[in-house]
Image (tube, rainbow, N blue to C red; front, side):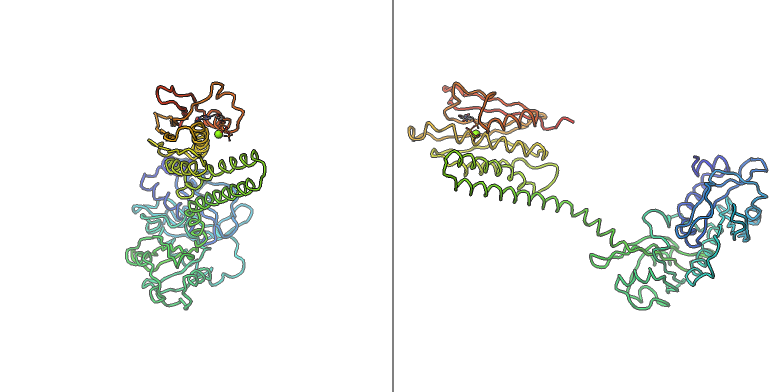
Length: 492
Ligand SMILES: Nc1ncnc2c1ncn2[C@@H]1O[C@H](COP(=O)(O)OP(=O)(O)OP(=O)(O)O)[C@@H](O)[C@H]1O
Ligand SMILES: [Mg+2]
């Protein structure tokens, strides 16, 4: 389907300026359709067309507040002047022409044909097709129609649409949301019930008629701007955290002078509330991590209690191991609860892990844990499993490396070093101890025990990394060397 721009410039031969003017009219004319409860059609004269198709429809709009009378899409269709004599008259006379025209099967309906002026020329005619009246117009309907009439005069005067801003469209208040009409001095001539409700929500209960907004204790800058400079604008007025009212101020002009202001009001309190909830999302995520951490700590203390009750040593150890594993996961959530996000500062996790290992393993032998370097920030998807794997390896070093030194060599101090660095896109962690080293029969590939199975699974299968484990030559101090390397960018 052709756009308004194509139709206006190619079919109607209008200038870029005129095309732009009509585009802005269409962006704002739902205000006109709603105020008049009418279907709107915008017609231009075809350029160089045959006499039998001299009008082309550039735009069509149905009212929001009553049913349409035109089911067909008329945009792009051409019409003979003799079918639309009122439109022809409006073009020729350059004045509003009011009468009746037949619409489909409905028969004759009241029609207004309003010349759309731009640069002193009538570039189009805006046709308002009024639906059948449902009884006599109410007081409000009459008021709506009188505003509509003033806006039609502005269309013919080239003062509507506004150059500065559209006055209708997505997110903007509509006629049904509530309207107020001010006179040229800013006194309120009338306010619809919805507008009165909006004022109530702002704490204004005094009768508004005949008073100005400042007299009611309300300062709306955009209304002052409209009165003084004939500029439309929008402003949100808040009352506390719970109430937010959107004011759309539309200056009404006659002969280039401001004769009044139309204000459309919309209660957007609920919308603002939603916005605030989104802003609070971060706090909510933090809270969730906090709760996960708390739950994990609860599980870990249950396991500890159960371990204490168990008479069998094997069961007791197994339960305590499980408890430590749960706690190493809790460490990550603890850090995330302080600064939630997709990424986490891994060094904080390392600090907590070291403390965790230090006070879990009650080694008889004195052991020092030294951390060198850092991994910076890592994605949470990587940080959690990596933390669990490192906790296993540190625990192993503290638990197994120094068993033979216990009583024999009192002078020996166990040292476990954790070296961390990022090489290109790889996070590397090296764990070294100066203990007894791995036994002859040790193989990383066939651990029957849980600890190293977890590490293998996490590093290789889950994080697509590598792991290496070997004894250090006694000539070089002895002990065990473990190297873990994982890509920091997860494969897409
Ligand atoms: N740093 C180390 N120094 C000496 N021996 C080690 C070291 N790390 C691991 N080992 C040996 O490897 C074995 C397997 O370790 P793994 O962590 O899988 O099991 P575990 O620590 O015995 O039990 P758990 O399942 O509770 O971790 C250990 O029992 C230990 O003999
Ligand atoms: Mg272990």
